[in-house]
Length: 170
Image 1 (spheres, one colour):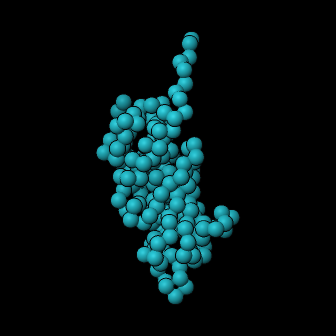
Image 2 (image 1 turned 135 degrees about the horizontal axis):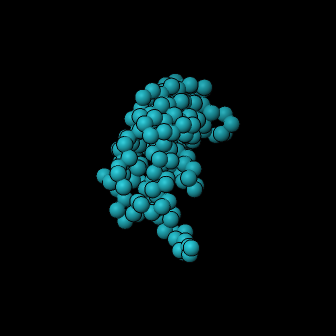
Image 3 (image 1 turned 30 degrees about the vertical axis):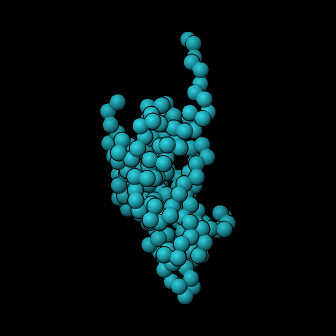
């Protein structure tokens, strides 16, 4: 059995970046919060750039709890969608020339989302990483951790359960 030539690295990178961009651009709220994603292979790190509109208590000042919760939930949903689409992205079933928010599957729906606020979020950039702990055809669980200056000192932690959308027939 003869194996074909592997795709050039730039083609694979372009397909991955295009799929991630389409996922993020499909949700206007992500832009409103100033959230972006850095991709290293299949690993995503969410970044919420600091903005004065994110402050909830100007006396401290501290990030608003709702902004923190939204940041964690966005990180979880995008990570879950990214891991769900990874096989299609890698196999080339998703064509980079046609990737857009309209032709990607729907995002998972939140069933419940529990947040532990460990300390006040300071007025600076925040980072988050999500990890899918269980993913089935209908249901998935995700753990998310957010930090600012030091990854070993998270300021918030969350656990979410999500209803997965149906995969389209091939």
